[in-house]
Length: 114
Ligand SMILES: [Zn+2]
Image (tube, rainbow, N blue to C red; front, side):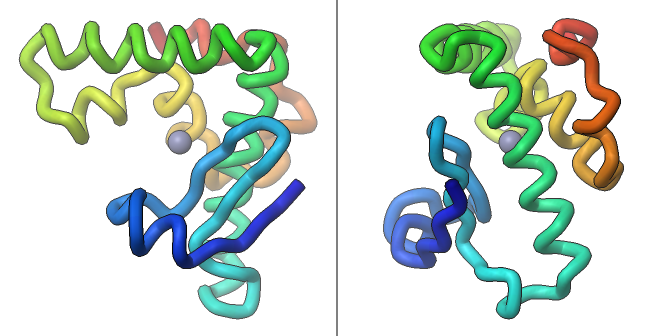
């Protein structure tokens, strides 16, 4: 289910433009507010997270997400680098521009990004 909420991102998630909290994908900008290509890439990024959440029974997505973030921080990474190096984010960033990626994506594909 797609929700557009500028409020969430101006008030809380200032540096982000999308978040997936199963069963919701929440984006900062609607389809008519940003270039269509940017919207599609952003939506694809979040849809990849949507599938990752389903295949980790949702709760394990958040546990693993936090685990990898903390692990990366303990390695000395900055907040942003730690976030970008979470396997779930690495898969999403790697394939967000491939708009047909989800059609051929394998189950637990994020494991390749450990
Ligand atoms: Zn992401």
